[in-house]
Length: 146
Image (cartoon, rainbow, N blue to C red; front, top):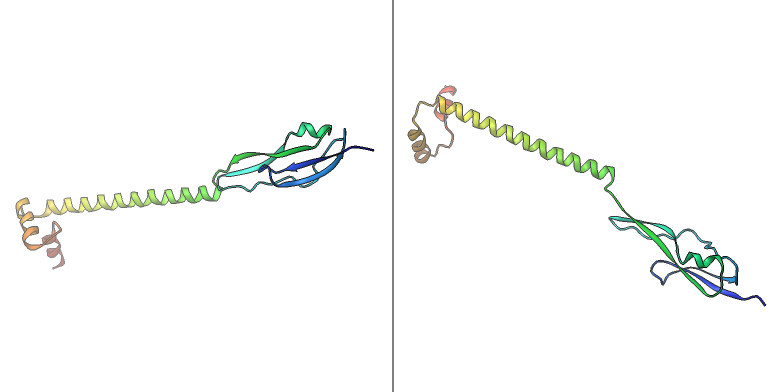
């Protein structure tokens, strides 16, 4: 009478049975299912690499249990995600550049207004405090409207 042994293929968790076979003593055991799959996480994907204890499958002499082995690989951001990030960064840089240019134009306009304003610095400050004027050169603008 030939001797048969259980050969059990377990997933990495060591509890999920992927396959179970009866194999004759001295025979080779082979996994007959599709390669096991381990669900990826947001940052890591897994690829089945083989069986821990695979050498025992070559010549079965007793009950044999092997475990799935996976290799992990860090998932890089997809091209779309990188493109979106780069576009967002470019938009922010453009917005900052635009704001800087606009601020520079306002400063230049104010400098021109100060140069053209006939009032002294003290008179400008007093006008702002007393009359609520917030722009230097308002007098000139009023003159231009006439």
